[in-house]
Structure formats: C-alpha cells, structure tokens
Image (cartoon, rainbow, N blue to C red):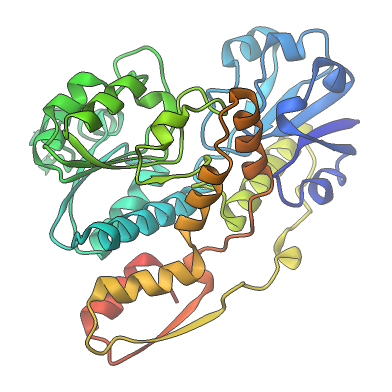
Length: 392
C-alpha cells in the first residue's frame, strides 16, 4: 500500500512506514500523478486536496496534520467516499505561546503594560481557550466571543444570557469591539452560514473597534480584509498589528508586511511538539481507517529540550520584563519577523516561494512546558504567572 506524506511532518516516514510504502513529498508540489496509486495521503495546509488532485486515484483516506480544513474539498470527499481527518488541538499550545511572545514584544517596543489591559478573544476553541489561560496569567482582563460554543453550551447567543441557572461567559462581538484594547482572532475560515468568518475583520469591524486597537491574527489570512486593515492603520484606528497568516498566502502583500509590527510566515503553530502531535493524530486515525492497532510511538524519538533550564533574578524588575527575558530565550519571535522581512523581495513569485521555504525550513522551536524556570527574589505573583504560562 502506497502512502504519500508531505514534508514538515516530523517522523512521518517512521510512522507511516509501519503501515505501507511511505513516500515524502513537498506539500505544495504534490500532483495528481503522485497520488494516482496511493491509498492514504498525510499532509498539511500547503496541499490543496480536491477533485483535480484526487479524481481517478486510489486515495481513500486523507489526513491533515493541521487544525484548519479549508484546504480540503470536503464536499468532494463525501461524493467520492473518501474518509478524512484533521488534527484539532495539535498545535493549540504552540499558537498560544506565539500570542504570548507577540504581546510581550509589543509591550516592550511601545511601552505598553499588558497587566490590566482588556483582550478580546474571538474564537475560544482549542487555541483560543489556551490564549485565555495565558492572557489571564499575564494579568489581563479577558472577554470571549464564540457564537457556536455559546449556542451549544447555553442554548442561545447573547451577552448575559442565563439558561439552566448558568450565565454565559461569552460576550457579543459588539462588546468585544467596544471594550478591547487588544483583539486576537482564533477562528476557522468559513465562507457562509451564520458564523461566517471570511473577512470577519472588515471595514466595519475596525471602524467599531477602540481607536488605537492592537490586532493579532494567527488564524487564517482571509479572516481579515486586507484593504480594510491598511485603511484602519492609515487613519490610526488600528495602532499595532501582529500577523502570522496572510490573505492569499504564500502570495502575501509586501505593503502590508511593511505596516505591521510583527509579521511571520504562518508558523505560529510550528513548535516541534505541535507538528509532532499533528503527525501522531493523523497516524492514529489512519490506523483506525485501516482497522489495525496503532503501535508506533514518537516518544523515544523526541530530542531533548533546547533550553532545559533557565535561571533569572527578578530583583528590582517588572514582572513583564522578567517574563520577556525568559520567553525570548525559548522563542525569539522577532527573529521570525526578520527572516520574513529579509525574504520580502519585489517579485511576487519569488516572494511566495521564499514564504514557503521559511515554513519548510523553520528552525526547531520547543514549547514552554519543556523548560524549568528557577526564579530568584521573585514575588508569588510572578511565580504564578510563570505557572499560568505553562513553565515547569
């Protein structure tokens, strides 16, 4: 049995070779000829999996090691009888750590104290819920907006709704826009239905937001209307921007990159652990599809932490200064920003290729729980913040 796996899936060869003849190919270059006699595809979001790719092939199972599915033609899968899976939550912690690093960086650059600021989190699923935890650990006031979850958990949608003696913890988008100093988006990309997210952040969204808004998007690029964001920056309605995902990527707009505070090439979820768990989740679902036990394990293959231990003296320093120092030792988000800017050549085609190359060749990044932090002369409050961020 032939299995096609995309690059940037750690241990894919080791995992899927236990099931058949596994072949690793560059995700964006996978062609109909490549998959013609394959039964299983294991890939990431750079591969558009649709009728043009699969029609006439032997493919019966598609697994994406990502939390998003907008690169999969699910309607065609149903028509063709192709089973599929995705990997919800695999890189959720990675994205929440990216948001943490971005906020601490903005705070340092612009003299913004995060503690006490109000952050609006749109989309409170696997990723957003972890962002909630970390934002609270940083001392921020958190507002949450997630209409599908609110309907599912409380029966109806609307701030302050009380059903079965429970008050909804979610608030309306209007309230998010009116009260938030910072808004971060963690929703799937949907183009229709009551919870459509395509161009959710449009001209009206930014117009209704607080002036000087700090805006972050590490969800999908098309959640943001690019011209609307540029206009909001022009008039000062938006003060600072962090973008990891871009409309039309890998052909992102260089003029937008020039305007954002931090720009990265869709790598918020690219921690080593996040990518490994994506592979593991797709492998297990492939085993379930084949009706065989999932015997392969990644644990013995995991390398040691790059930064196993950090010691820092907190005497006479603000909590956020200490947090920034430690987070930067594990993840220097500004290095990712520099790499993208350095690759932003004028030619659209070459710039897009460089974007993909940065993702493919992304350096190993490990998550906070794999590092032990030893604090000297730290308050109990600072220790609690490190615990809340997931450090050992």
